[in-house]
Length: 140
Image (cartoon, rainbow, N blue to C red; front, side, top):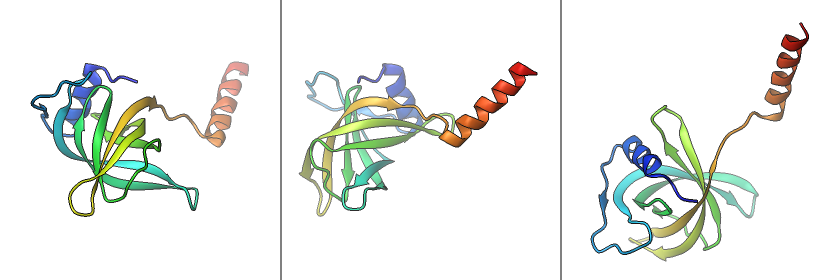
């Protein structure tokens, strides 16, 4: 998945950082340097529960990002990054970790590729209630 220039701009604006191109960056998609907070959701393999962790977004491009976290994330692991957006909610993007390297002290640098944007749908109970409402309005 590739983010549009508008999506990257909106995410950077919501993170309240200007960001700047990394010097000497010759990748397929130029990275924007920044240091801004965000959350990721990982599934804990032992308990099968989702864990939400605070991370620092180190850089961002239209194809992926690098985050700094206090726990290692194995390459191939998928996680969701939650970016704040202009509307006061979150933009959620599924990512796949491509590498994980020791960073500063006990921290890790995780490079990840964007997979897809996640849209939230109604839960089963909400969907059923909405369906009932629509049926009753049509049949009335």
